[in-house]
Image (tube, rainbow, N blue to C red; front, side, top):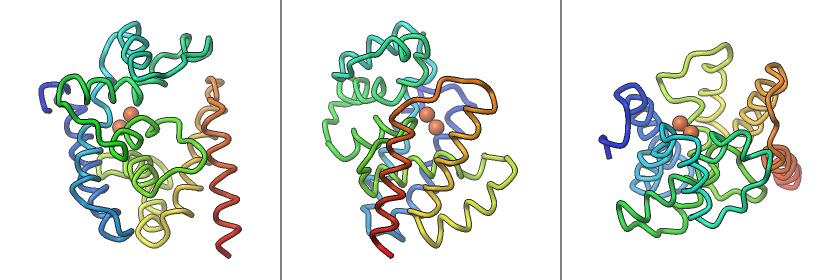
Length: 182
Ligand SMILES: [Fe+2]
Ligand SMILES: [Fe+2]
């Protein structure tokens, strides 16, 4: 897998794998699946924008005009095509976790939540609040993910970037899930 990544991104991916295994252990998810999904998750990130669109379409993604303007947003679904074409991996759980690691979606599986969050808190990440998020993730995956979505949305708004609707619906669905648990 290493050849799909620059050295810098490979270091990030290894960090995500370690964190994902840690979270998998605590949340009853197979560690090996979490590790594989983590190692694959950014495989399409360094591809050309046009290539990312092509790979995402091959996965079955219906690309919107806004996504076409922001192809990087689709490096998750694009990576699933590489996973299938280059590694022959069709595992549904791994594919979904890779596909939705950037945008999220309503009704995320535990593995999807783990990859989304591990991506944000792996040891190489360094931003205000990351330590608190790490501690929360070790205790409560859903609450940490809710914080994670808030951070993503705040980040996007602060920079006047395009806010993807999946992230909004994912966040609201998770909030609903948490309230129903209480
Ligand atoms: Fe990513
Ligand atoms: Fe990542």
